[in-house]
Length: 287
Length: 305
Image (cartoon, rainbow over all chains, first blue to last red; front, side, top):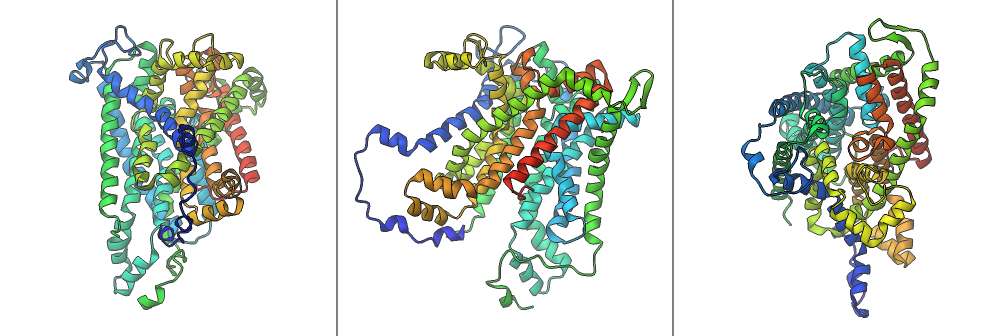
């Protein structure tokens, strides 16, 4: 963004003389794009507000769709719906394992693609892009045919395999962007100061790429924790994840507690992302 | 090499080459790519093979190259195919229409609030996809504020004329499904749009404003062409998942809004007709690949990954 500050101040150069009549319509017309943007934000965030609000509801029937009265019941008894907390536990377990493996594999691919010129680069890029350009229902069902043909039993292992598969590409793209954005002069400076390749990587490159790896890992975890379609194809009746529990509940009756889990997820994600933004803000170059 | 020699050099210079270690990039790629080959590429082959087999789940399947499964499946389920692509197209167009002003505002008008607004764009992901889609059942319910607003402003009459709603009801209608699809994939549109708008040098916009005078002409001649990579990436990232999605059509629609994903899911997991299900799934994959290839070729963008 260094170019911005060096831009000639053409706007200020013109005298601010022409200020015609200012009615409310002029204001609306001048800010029309920002007003549309604000409305789009409302559309994007309204469901999150509803999820949080309805975690404090006391519904009249089996479905938590209409506001009845304020209640803390669900927050005080979060594990009351049978099977829900087991499902959350399984989702957390699969999410953490899938994140760990996908982040390691994806980061390795990202370094290879960003730092080396080699035969088969284009094909590798295509293979990384394909899972992101394939509908979930195709990935889920094709993986099911593989497991059925190999007579491999469906369950937690097959879900984990699937989650690692669809997370890798997202980690690669996130980490690769970070590596590409690095200033190569920093590494060159380290080398010039007699650091060897290993020291340069550990002390300069890795710490600089770390925010990208962290972002990739967060993305992988949220994709895994939230996935329904691919999971449903490769699960068994004894491996019910949280999204599968919610899907089942959607037709039988939605307990308020699923909104409690949704609200807790929201708060944790908000804290993590907020913390990341805060660290970036603290480390910003001071003018 | 002295440090001074590097100063002022092009920052985007190629990274230092590591000659003599030709195997290093392949070693880094090996485990990840092996995973993708075994669990992404090979399943596509087993999917194709499954679609050409005959038999049943009890007696087992044999490969008989029974291509007729494809024609049978397509003649039965072409309405769901067509509907999926129409819904996905409308959702993509709507997401572009409302996502562009949002991305534009964040990129050019937000000042020091840029970071906060970007967090708000990804904030929907902080809560489960399914829970947020269920929340639309509350928002669009018959005594909710949206239905009242649509009735008061006459929007309901427009939607009725387009046959997108059912009387005065918004929930369980094609309108609800398309609104849900637009909502769910909107961040996938906004983020690439923002990324390419944010890269534009503001001086180019000023030059455009000086050259063309009218803000709209400047936008059409400068901003829009420069944001094309974001438009292409955003429309793909919205259209592809929307075409395969069935969560919205199941939770917000009715039996007449069934999309192809729902049929594939049902054939695989309830009807257990694996060849038909595999044929539908493979057809969906090939159709999307063909559409995407034509689109990317026409748009002439290679900056996707």
